[in-house]
Image (cartoon, rainbow, N blue to C red; front, side, top):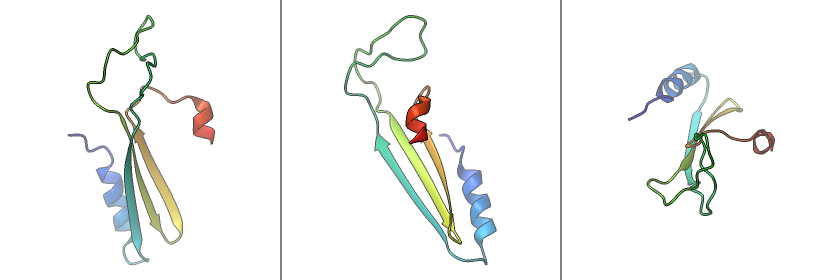
Length: 86
């Protein structure tokens, strides 16, 4: 089990105490490709032969005193720059 973001949540929650309401939101969206998209991490072109586990993008949004912060984690090797700029 991974707990990479739990310390951040506790830290932000502690900072927000006594100064207003801390609101949290979370979501997970399945992003498993339906098409035969080449897989990353290999020297030569390699196409998938099936799906072992679904891939997800997960988000955690924190808001206090009108300030929002979002943490996004994806089951990806990389994300091209263009979609990140939108």
